Image (cartoon, rainbow, N blue to C red):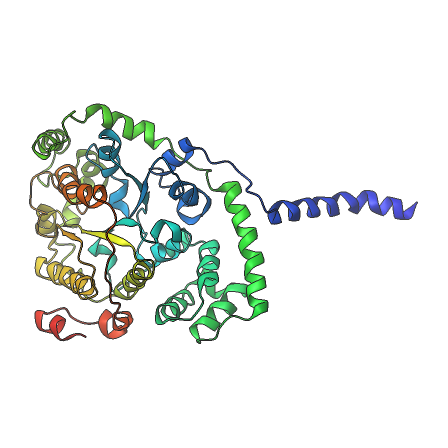
Length: 427
């Protein structure tokens, strides 16, 4: 009787653990992601989607719709009428952007996200939007915890065959993040990579088991928190966009919308943004950016890791460099010479390694309705970007010829003051 009584108490618990273990270790997928789910996820900005693998795998395996990764940050959230997602949908382009990024996603988080989507990168095309605001000297990676995923770290570790300088650099960067440093499993494994020690057979077994468990979690929860952005933003934009997709027609419509939506302030900032983020602080913001500097930053090293990943996967990449709103930078005191020097540093890093597809809009921040707010592309800006994006993606993949220089991972490069002479001399 005593044994039977113990079974009634503990038996259900044991069975529950067995069922949970079977669920997480099962060799089949735990969810069904529909084409509608993927379409919504492409503009959802869900952190679960960004940090996970299941939805991205479904998107980039779709045989009917060619989803193209668009990496960036908060500019991707500006879902106005001329946004790349709207233009591709309206004019039935042979691609549809899958937006990966929001405020706080910088190169390190993008590098880790890329580890979950090798097939989307290998001999494929992507668009990568660069913000100079990533390249700050202080307060770097404050948003890292928000976008960190143990699954991405597991994917990265599992793909390491021979330890490269980039692997060691990423390992050192991760060990400075609390989420990795305080993990009993990952801190040990990442430390080995940092010390140039290959993972043992036991390490790989532990990692494989952990990866499978995390993958099951992702499959269960990845398409939660989806928004209704496709219906809220994309469908209305499709209806408003002109039937003709030529640039003059698009510019006329973009200018019209820009005028309608930026008429309550002298900075040509979208009215709603000005009212909610600027108006109440306008006096305090005068000359507030005089000390901003993007020329020296650890971000240059993180960005190099991203470039190394693109080279490793033979990815054909279009880089877009954004401007800042010139009316706003004049008011806040942001130094244009500093800004252009930081852009030149990024371009040196790109072009010297064979990344030559660059749409540089850094000098266009004074053009009417080019910016939606202080630092993000707007109506005419997206039309200008589309003049580069459309032919790049429509014409399809072209095999790149990259030559990676690991010196761009160094603190010497991160701290280099980018004068014309210094940039020429750096090798």
